[in-house]
Every structure is written in C-alpha cells, then in structure tokens.
Length: 102
Image 1 (cartoon, rainbow, N blue to C red):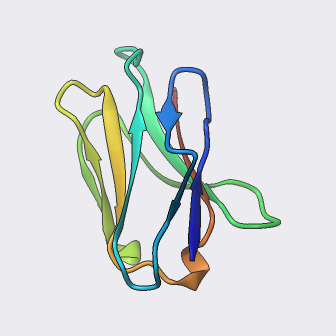
Image 2 (image 1 turned 45 degrees about the vertical axis):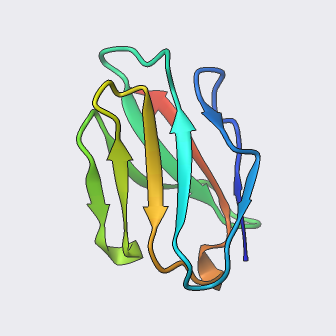
Image 3 (image 1 turned 180 degrees about the horizontal axis):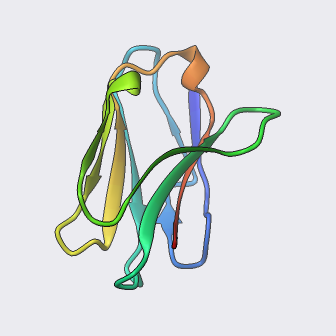
C-alpha cells in the first residue's frame, strides 16, 4: 500500500512519498531544524476523505504507539523525529505528516 508524507509547515521537511507492502515495517522521518524550545512535535495522519487525526505528540521523549505496533523516535537535539509503523495494514494507507506547535 501507499503512504504519503507531506509538508505540514515551512519548518518541517518530509519525503514526498513512501511505499511499503502490507505487514512490512516503515519509517517515516521528519526534519525540523528550526524547532523552538516550547514547540511540541505533532504527528498526524489523514485517511482519504477524512480530516486529520492526531496520532501522537511529544515535547522531546520518544513514545510507543502500542495500538499501531509502532513508536515515535525523537533525536536528542529535537531537530528530527521518525514515526515507525511495525505492521502496517491496508487501513493505515494515508497521508502522514508532522508539525510543530504548542
């Protein structure tokens, strides 16, 4: 299935698109070199025909996404993060994007 990653704000950069097969893990990375001290890192996904859904947000700690067999990894300097989906299925085909904000 297809996973798209798009630009959410000028401060973040993502791959234009990624693909994987059902059940094969995928890593979706996001670069945010201009992150401010009080910014949270937000990760969303948007299924076709639906509004954005917040998956996870964090200030600096890496976090697990047990319901999606995945996790969010944040670099020590907070300038990048990566969403790992361990066993994606067809229902996970969506646009995934990160954003910075309060």
